[in-house]
Length: 90
Image (cartoon, rainbow, N blue to C red):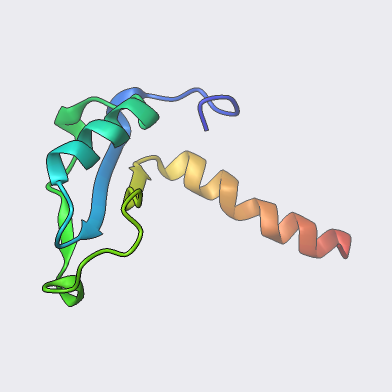
């Protein structure tokens, strides 16, 4: 998005989703570095309750980072892409 649109960095929000046995602080630090989004724009990390009591098999798993960007203009622009592709018959 940063390469295709003029972005207001303050409109980003992130949520880290992880397993119950993971180190949430380490995951947050990892995703802060990857996304380059300030920690003040991160929501509280959410753990999957289904994983409680089940040890992770993949120890290098970094969870999932959900990134939201709050812009109706960009949303409407992105929604036009599949319509355009459909009209072109691709």
